[in-house]
Length: 278
Image (cartoon, rainbow, N blue to C red; front, side, top):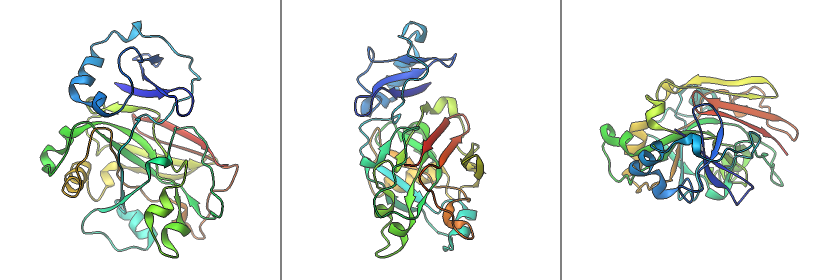
């Protein structure tokens, strides 16, 4: 099942993409794609609905972030070996964690707005994980049971703010529009093994990132288990699992995003994003 949120910014409503690829409204069935609506019992109920009877929406409807009311946006850094090397960092012996402010979250095709003073805006295609049930001190072998689904994340970053000066990652990752999520959340039963998904990103049509989640240093189940030892993960929380090589920071010389650039990206089976830089 592919769940979406559609409508104007700040007034999104729940929806889904049916088996024929049509966009349908779910407002009669749940208030939002968030929180307890992501519980296994809720998702099972939605699967049982005749999706063909739901109101059809225009194909060009705006899609917002595929999950609403996100409580925590937890991210993993340096989780692909080749990206570690291009960043000039040491290979981590345990997951590197940081947070993005939830105010950075935007729709999959909303513009990336370069904030005042930013000069080194970078891209990062990532597999996003959406939590479905409370996860606290979970074992790695049980971790996938706590996942509602998966989505595409662009972990947009301002490298100077992230790495220079005080070098705070959250500062370089949290500007408004720096967290496009979606277009849809695909439930775990449709995704299957999250460690066998291709992911890619292009800038102005030029392929910059191309990899597979099988290249992760720490797989999804290990990440969820590890994070849950330090903080309780709640339904609707998002975990972004790291980016493969090919970011602007790793180019020689680096070529960062500029106004007018078009960024397209996707993860196998989870859809695609497209953003214009403003």
